[in-house]
Length: 114
Image (cartoon, rainbow, N blue to C red; front, side, top):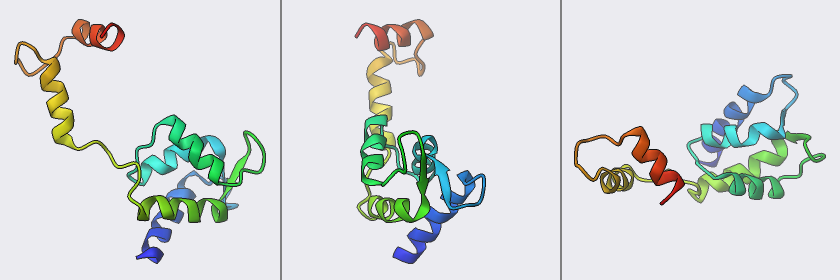
């Protein structure tokens, strides 16, 4: 199981390894993590980066440093997406007229005022 997870992580990492040198730009980490089916917020991405030894601020992340941290994330099932039924329930709460949609104006109001 661990070998399969590490292979999946390595493959995702290599997509962003533009120079094929086992490193990626630190700004790509959130995209890599999300491509693996995990959905951390930006603060959680920063916590992950704190666990990974980044060469320098704004620098690069090596696969050998990323792999064990991300393997643990996947094994622990961290950053799972919100279940669909919870999202549907939240949408239904905003759809006061029960018409199956929310107007742009209502959505803006909910996101900015309420």
